[in-house]
Amino acid sequence: MLPRICSTLVAILGPLFVMGGEAAAADRPNVIIFLVDDMGPLDTSVPFMVDAAGQPERYPLNDFYRTPAMEQLAARGIRFSTFYAMSVCSPTRTSLLTGQNAARHRVTQWIRSEGNNRGPFGPPDWRWEGVQDAAVTLPGVLRGAGYRTIFVGKAHFGPIGEPSEWPDNLGFDVNIGGCSWGQPGSYYGEDGYGAIRGNKRRTVPHLEKYHGTDTFLSEALTLEAEAAIDAAVAAGEPFFLDLSHYAVHAPFQSDPRFADHYADSGRSQQAQAYATLIEGMDRSLGEILEHLESLGIADETLIFFLGDNGSDAPLGPAHGHTSSFPLRGKKGTHYEGGMRVPFIAAWAEPNPDQPCQQRLPIAAGAIQQQPGTVMDIYPTILNLAGIEPPANHPIDGVDLAPQLAGRTNPRRRDRFLMHFPHDHRSSYFTVFRDGDWKLIYHYRPDRSDADGEGARYELFNLGSDPFEKHDLAAEEPMELRRLAGEMTAALAAEQALFPVDKAGGEIRPVLP
Image 1 (cartoon, rainbow, N blue to C red):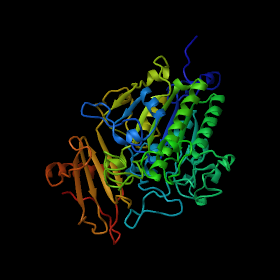
Image 2: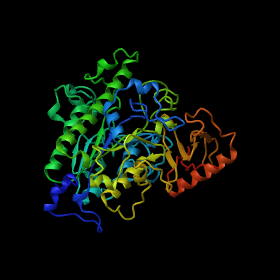
Image 3: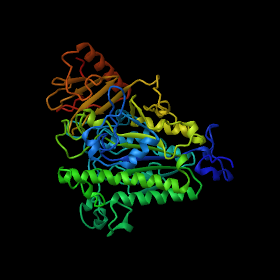
């Protein structure tokens, strides 16, 4: 018997989609982005941190959370010890859609559904309305190449009344649950996910069939994702699924399926509820893996598992070593705990004889220490599928293929730019990492003029000080000056927008 190529091999009996002489759509794998809201790299029983020898190192939070499906996925693929997203959700979600850094696509703040939340000193022209051009989005490009594109869960791509409010205006054929909301009205089916009780202004759409039932939101979204997969397979189409859970964002409502697991933990009720949201998300992952196996398509389905920003676990102060211990900070901050997320890439069922996997080998049970970013997912998927990116659409990400195979990519510059010209837990800052060095620039518009008076720097060496305890800005003036110049050049290259002072004048970084 000839080996199966991809789930859509039956499509060879119909039209084949060819783009610039690349592989036909029938030779393209299915792709799932499994995105978790507000999940940091310590919110799991899988150890993402490594010791000096590059071996996984467990910390107390790894023993608090229960994520057996993540453990299974990590054993089948590779996880990154350092993977960067933006520090809040809408910028990361837009970077996944576009392959661009937030400084370039200009969705630099989370998007408030009802009104512009640029903040008192934020740039007036930031992209509050979200990305509008489906022709350049990842699902839009994949749809043009013959993929069925499916969105399930939290979108948060744009505000009420804009096309970006709805994922099916951004390249998705199917949208279940996605709208402008950044959090659910309720996680409980008994509440109608906000329609019956809870925050009715944040009711999750399209799930009426579960209203009044005991179906937890994470479970309802999983059932809908499985049904959408079934439809794609029945139609003989390769599919791209963005399964974007509302969990583990507030409100921290306990998933009753797992509450007993944490009752004797000694943690607060909120922390216990957060842990049940984590375990419910993990159950969803396990059920998706089982469903792919039952359909016989697991070995031709690529999964990217990640969070959209740092942890928001209710475990302590935002800028301390608490919710993401041993990392410093949490969601919305300029420290590592605000921007580092869990990332696992795996074939749902490893099979070295599978042609799709031969085009993208993934090391099993491995840990990659060279950093990656959310911008990298866009070019990695397009390159694997043999699809050219849109013309005149700059891409800031790098194909992850060498790193997924367990190698270091020597052509990759280990840099990361995180630009946040708004107020949040950390406000009005730019982060620039280059190798082990990390620079943080604080604009301080409330006390600055357009010349930057009152601004300050922080400098850390993450090689010797991975938990950001020792600010070296005063001790390393030459390194500070070099990094400040590189940061300024990177902001200029991406045409970043800047905070404004009290008079409305733009505030740009001032070199030390």
